[in-house]
Amino acid sequence: MHCVVEILSVGNELLLGNTVNTNATWIAAQATAAGAEVRRITTVEDNLGEISAAVKESLRREPNFLIITGGIGPTFDDMTLKGVAKSLGRRMKLDPNAVVMIRNHYARRFEGKVMKLTKPRLKMARIPERSMPLFNPVGTAPGVSLSLNRADIFCLPGVPSEAKAIFQQSILPKLRARAGGRPYLEKWVKIEGIMESSLAPIIDHVMSRVPGVYIKSHPRGVENGRSRIELHFSIFAATRSRGSQALRRAVYEMNEALRHRATKAGHIS
Amino acid sequence: MHCVVEILSVGNELLLGNTVNTNATWIAAQATAAGAEVRRITTVEDNLGEISAAVKESLRREPNFLIITGGIGPTFDDMTLKGVAKSLGRRMKLDPNAVVMIRNHYARRFEGKVMKLTKPRLKMARIPERSMPLFNPVGTAPGVSLSLNRADIFCLPGVPSEAKAIFQQSILPKLRARAGGRPYLEKWVKIEGIMESSLAPIIDHVMSRVPGVYIKSHPRGVENGRSRIELHFSIFAATRSRGSQALRRAVYEMNEALRHRATKAGHIS
Image 1: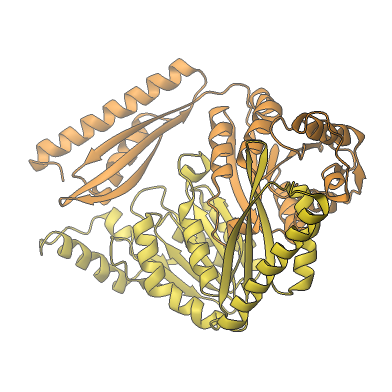
Image 2 (image 1 turned 90 degrees about the vertical axis):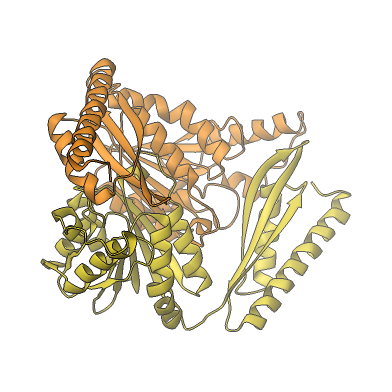
């Protein structure tokens, strides 16, 4: 089954240019490998109106999964959950299971010492009505999952190790199930001495010969007067063996076309 | 004057998780340093409908600048300019100045040898009606600029060195002029041995004491049982000296509050 994913990253640091959005790239790679299609990544500020607007806009595009990172911690500017609640017209509630998770986290970390559940600590247990906390194996703030008619929404912390741990434990199995194990295969090929503008018609030719394979050229600059390009061959295939066969065939066709061109021109350039 | 920027990144590689979106982070840092506010970053696929929809959505939010990267090269899946034209109901035209830029680029690169302007090469000179090519000092495809009533749109190549060169030459001066030189200042402070949930009320306290300064906490994990947090202090100030005074004061207030807490508790934790 086709499975469309959107990622929403929340955090001023991403918009100030302080932090490269590696969370989104990591999640995108994981989702792609699971056979899903990540159709959009959006980054917004720590601002209630911005978060709520971005969630609404995303849901209007009807993805199967909306994965949100950042803004679920204890500080004043962690407002992702409130933004999600607002976008859905839901209230926030103190979730008893989330309270237990947080209490246990502190007990684990401080060897049984009972930490006072202060307001900022309890804030991490305040989640939208009819949502569920997701166990955070490496940090304090639980993730949150929320099922709508069309879409599942997941909220993860912005700290990469925590986002990854919750993603792998609680989201990846659902992505895989929904995408139905449609295998994604890829292959990188480096070529030298041909400009992207000369390669363009060859890419068209090879793609027309091997349907389903997508070829993307990534120019990597010029060295000693010779263009360097990395070609990325990818396919979402019905089966792994058909996919790898198609990729092999596309790489073969590409080599043939380049050889033919070299013979004709006397050199590859 | 307030200057709001949106960034739109175009490229399947970003959504497949192959490539970290360092272009967006770099542009965001540059725009922030110029005094502008980057309010949103959006990433979409190499797909005409997706690009055109994202441009329309962005313009509806009325930023002063929309900076687009990726998808202006010679291959079949470079369709950003067509997407922009579509979103504005404009046609594409072959721009004579862009043709000259491309011709000169090849002449420069191949020591005066006249390169045939094949279809893929001329494609890079096909830009939306009433838009302007921007000189690309390090690559082939010109950037594109387009002025609407409310917003200026800029299209840059996805190759980082080319995006940076065109940005610095053709966009940064306009951003600076529009933002009116509102200086942005920041300071990082590392602290150890206090959890983010304990720090949260202290951040609130310090921010209330020094208006204008934004304090964001970035948890960096736990080492030897001690939490490590980086605090980011930032301000958009009227003048550079007022800004740096406010930052110094906020860091001082933070130290005072932490010292007070440590004295009260007997230790920082």
